[in-house]
Length: 264
Picture 1 (tube, rainbow, N blue to C red):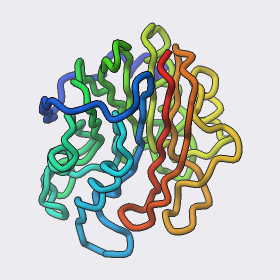
Picture 2 (tube, rainbow, N blue to C red):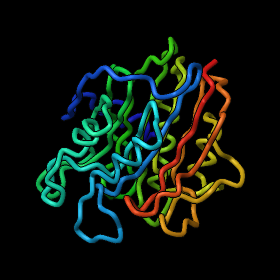
Picture 3 (cartoon, rainbow, N blue to C red):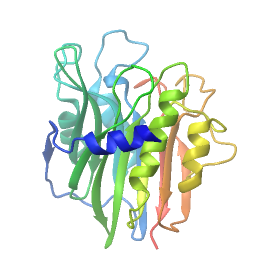
């Protein structure tokens, strides 16, 4: 647990990001909140090496008609994509957005994004700890108010190393970080962990996943065998009306997941 203490002290809130404010209509019905979580593979369809198809990602989001979206593996002005992907997706979906830089990559930046039909407030980025040197990972979050309900919306992408050590300390950090939060928290992300792993067992101690049993797989996109992408909630007894894995096989190497909460 000393990793948590060290990283709590040195974590940075200042970061490079972009955001816009737009006025858009509410997607979901009154009293409902629809959340989409999607690892977009920097908008590169796995069947099209080197191609960037940002329209395919935007179409998935538009068809889902979500209120809030968590994206992982987002490029910002890298050589391979040439786009500020979060900005372009926001423009094509009519949503507000915030990009969170995890690392410098390929002449640009690479990280996470949060999109919303509602105003994004108090955006924060926290670096996640490691036990073994690997690609740096982050936790990002914002505050949102939807239909009079204020909550924290968080997005992350845990380490992808073969060993579980980094994922475990990263999940420990996330849980410790949110431990004293009083507002409802919705956490989304590619956790690179299956149910029954230590990271997900840790998550389940504080959060309730939108799907626990007989959950459809999210990777690989063409014939998914494993579930590693999640939406989870704490500090609110909001019933999950629907949880689905969208049968999207072209746009990314992950399938997106979507959950609808009844806000109470």
